[in-house]
Length: 457
Image (tube, rainbow, N blue to C red; front, side, top):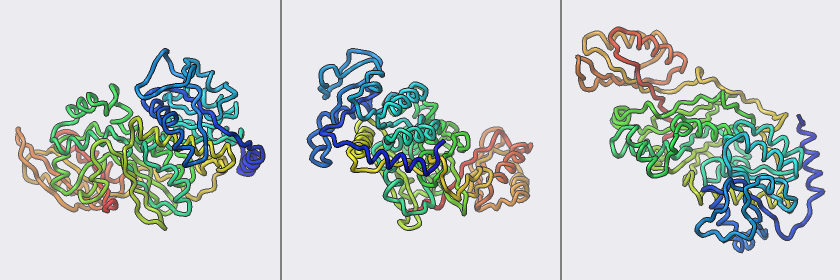
């Protein structure tokens, strides 16, 4: 692999060989929802792009699986559509290849070939970059081309450019992100309509907010893919997916939604990257946020990302995190940046997290070492001495109770106990819960949700 010196040499050589082009040609791999939006903008807003940037972008080829086809509001040039990706990646007239086909294996193969052919790359494929970003960025540097990926995270919200450029002089203290619209829609509906997860999921699928197989979304995998990209940009080292703690929302019940409300919290699926000394926590899980906080009030399918920098302080980015036109807007912004690289008006550079010799004093903090507050709900026998047994176990693991509420009595002489703790170490909390769940007075597995009080603005 190349070191920093050779990467810099390659970039200098690239800038010396830039040619001035009157127009820059674009090819798309994939013409689904986002691809349709990209073609609309490139074709219908070409004069606006030229006026604002001085760049003439020309869409000349789109590869899609089946032909023929058309889209409302899109008048394609003659012979633009093909079902052969090779007509895009091997076409000597195409300067920028935009990968919007999704998946990993085919996308990786085609992007790799396009880079080797000297094409600049734009992609919205977070899974591809989460799994193979390091090798693709190294290859792009070797071949003196740019690899842009704004559309991969949070749709139309310009969070990638912000971290790479606007906050380059900041040490990032924390990133808190609601970055999966499906989960946010489901949790919002559970909170507002007071219905359970399964029913809301069916509604989300009927409205197009959730896929037929929603696993990647509701299990937190999609959010984790995005978080690895944000973390790599913010802290300067690549985070393997297997090292990200991931917990989805499928176990969130209406009881947890209601009890959270009573306690002054809202439950969100939160992607968290938090710097503590020289270690960064990287985790995705359901989180209780104070009701008064701005993140707690991000509803529906919208996304929001809070970034806290040492100089800039707390900032919040809010907008549509998915959909045809918001994501297409981010993709076209990347196309414009790639075109500026071609014209010599923008220096292409590998993000620091994907450099082969990235210099950073920050390491990953294992989930067992984090400290936070916890919500715990237990179903127990309604008899004297139960709370004393639970409190004793928590005390053994140095977990301090902030509040305890005994809820309504259930059938067969059981009741719910809701405990909120002060800050505790994750490993201690998990060990304590394992012991508590084994008590004869406890019925079923406990419910545990982490609380983030710091996001209180």
